Image (cartoon, one colour):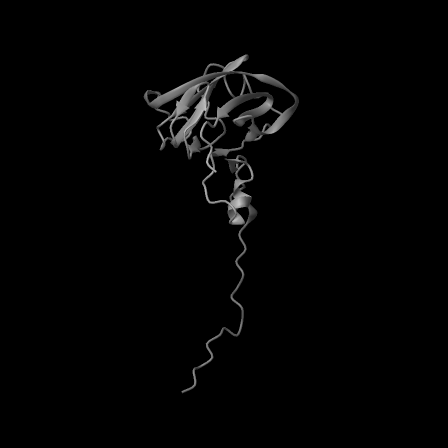
Length: 189
């Protein structure tokens, strides 16, 4: 038995939408960082069997010529460290920050910025969005001095670099950054 040819003889019509109907790109795209930074590449090459020490999911708003601290981000008020969803950090092993043990697990990060220092807060209210934070679920707070940058940082950035027995977690935007050392006492092989 021979099957009938059912392929379309003419291509379907192309539907064009007016430009105004197409949503614009998010001005604060989502990003993720890993520590160690080379973890994603090693995982893709299948040359690492252990999880990373930590990873952070966050949004990256743009400076766009604005004065950020004391203006867009108010001093003394809670800030989600980015835009849109709450910034999440997941530790895959216990780490230490300012001599305080942080158990492996998933948390959200936010801060309370001041001109000379920021209070970085680790909170266990995972399913919050934006600034809907239940401060009763704050579990750790760390005060970190601010550092003025030589050049403005256009995109809000979180990064981690190797440092001694762990990582320097740095967070920066506009003309300000902070560095939060994360100590790894029992590194995995």
